[in-house]
Amino acid sequence: MSSTAFSSICFNRGHCWMKKVLRLLANHPEFGVALLTADRKAGQPISSVFPHLGPQDLPDLIAIKDANFSDVDAVFCCLPHGTTQEIIKGLPKHLKIVDLSADFRLRDISEYEEWYGQPHRAPDLQVGLVLFNYKRVSFI
Image (cartoon, rainbow, N blue to C red; front, side, top):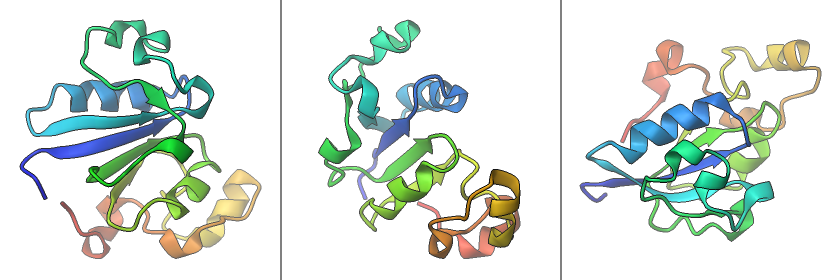
């Protein structure tokens, strides 16, 4: 891995965590933002969604199906619950993934349907909060 970790951020318009993650990564000396995906806003600059980020040197938004993850080390998913499961299942296996949705935070996957009213569609990827599962998670 390079000395700079290049990240991708997948988000849904208005997701509060996305703004925080993007601001932190864009200003971090050891991270670079290589991709920003937002299907409904594809082709637009990030400033069209978040005007305060206009001065940052960030890539334009693209659809996830058009994203090339070959030079990306990590993906930060800032998507609503129920969406992230399918996105993560389709990502290249070399990526480190940080999910800020509700899809992978429960320790017991059987509780997902109780809380969210639908079965979990990627139980094989379930890790839960790192705080509780730190032995199962490998870090960059």
